[in-house]
Length: 182
Image 1 (spheres, rainbow, N blue to C red):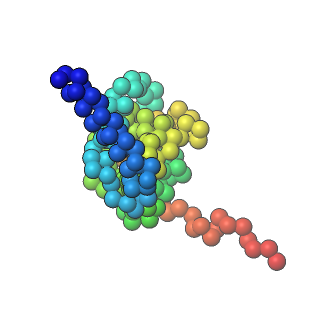
Image 2 (cartoon, rainbow, N blue to C red; image 1 turned 45 degrees about the horizontal axis):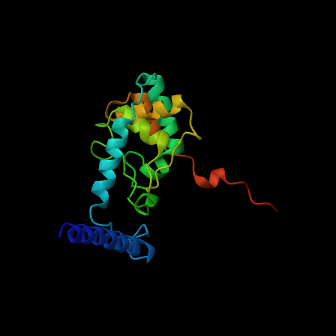
Image 3 (cartoon, one colour; image 1 turned 90 degrees about the horizontal axis):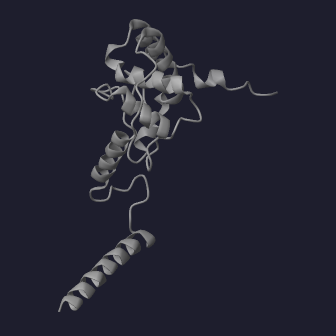
């Protein structure tokens, strides 16, 4: 009797695994950025991300949250982050909603000011798998990653010099393009 029970459990597990494999291999699982999420997808991804960051043992920042570093963080943010995460008093970038999950707009409500700078640093340094968030380890140095992380953690208390720089309009794209050849 026990042998039949164990065989039944094994067959059930194999059928479940086969069904899951078929679900993904046959193209029934959502793959497009515009598809609705799978059941529990957001919750499972968030749980995994939070657990991974919690285990990461991130060292404390060697970069203080002082005016020069916050201003430098604004410069890094505008160059590397604003195209997806937006700027204060500006509409959310169109690219943000075309991603799955959509890139968070960091200037409404708390943004990430309630996240410790170390958590933001981890996300900047490592990126977030299966989202549009890339790793910036190849593009930014340690100091720059900490500066932008400190700036975002203190975005609700930036000095006037950083606010001014953050709110300055970027140069028009046309001005950046080469003149047409004759």
